Length: 589
Image (tube, rainbow, N blue to C red; front, top):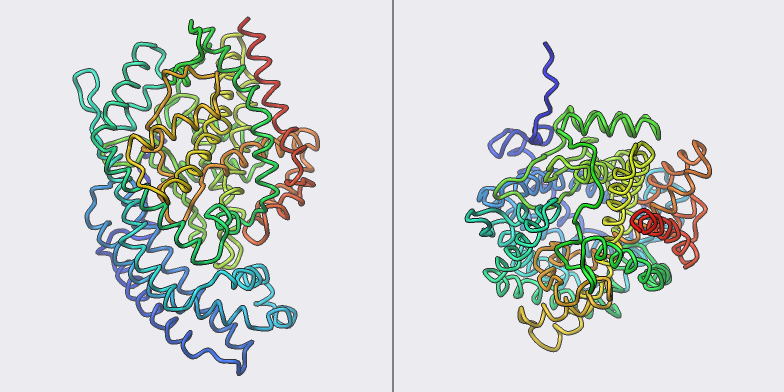
């Protein structure tokens, strides 16, 4: 008899079966060898036979990229489900050392590419033509490149600087013990209680969460200060106007697009405050919603889900959109791509790691069986679907940027939530689903805006003074005031949101907040086009996803006839949010 039970932990055997496996040992040695070959090759570059040297170096970089990313992803995935795994920590350090040794030669290679006649070579050679965007992007970045030695120093110092501070935050939050109801739980476990149906539980969990941060607030304050100061120093050295300008270039996104997005967010924020105040009124509060009630359920859910039921639900609904999406979801569940449940040492939240070199992905969630958890699965499977549509690119063409990273994932959410809403057979269930969508939209609009404002403030103020925990709490509350306004009770907000969100703690990935708003609203705009155009939209959507790794976000959007620098597009995307809020208010009068 066939056992249909889904395994609750992912398998990494498609990468390696362990650190002692022959495959891991061979690839580790190969990475060391190839890194030395890159160093040698870079030192020998010259103007003679420029085109052949360019072809040769790109082939070598491809080979190295495939092996080093496979090794690093394996280590990161192992560590994400067990932050106490000392062997993974050790290997991450060793691999980081190997990879940092290529920083100087990569700087030399980038300078060689920037000086080469790439326009001519691209026309002459099919292999090079596939790297047209990649090569031209390097040429455009050349003005921000430092000397070879400085590039190497930055990469090496980051190992014990930004990377180490980020690891500290991850470790401190994943190992934090929270005292609740005479028991010890994890930070993930206590934050999940925000969704409880019991108001007393929500409030008590919120108070326990805030109390627990006292144990780590000073340590994590050091992390965020030093990461932001390091990034600012690097941006200054490279000649960027600000860390935000450096982020936008890495994002392949124009300032005019960000301005249009933020302008629409600011203009439409009052509508979300209407929702928050109405929710407060329903729950019996007069002065805005207390923070611990943001995720309070309104209405009644019809059911909870096991992992097996979540699979069936998602496959059935995704098949109505595109069969290749439904088939990929089936594979993800059946072939152990997903690590489902929370446990001590496992990082909180959820993420998806694309592994294009094996044409798979891996997904981490902290599944609790609610519809919200199913929507989270849908979201992360959207990232996997995005990965599926870029896996036939050449190896160096498989990275998409932060803003478009949230597009397919949020589009998936829209598919599932709208299907669920159409199937609702009672007012209570319809209300539950609408309010669930508004909770999510409130997160990617109001909360993300507060995170953007907080990060901007930390970047600016940490250059003038060290920001202690008390300073960071004040900045967080100020950002929440600007974002949520009178929608939240000013006495009951969350001064510690800077601790528990890992997005602030990367020296290589600043401002990982506005991409969520971008992705959420862009996806709503895409979904509206899908409803208008029907099945004729799907090939354009696939083409757009495929283009995200080899074009700017603006050029990718044009494939679907969208102008991202126009605030009108973003305002139109907000219109569907406003309709949901109006329906919520009408249903709860």
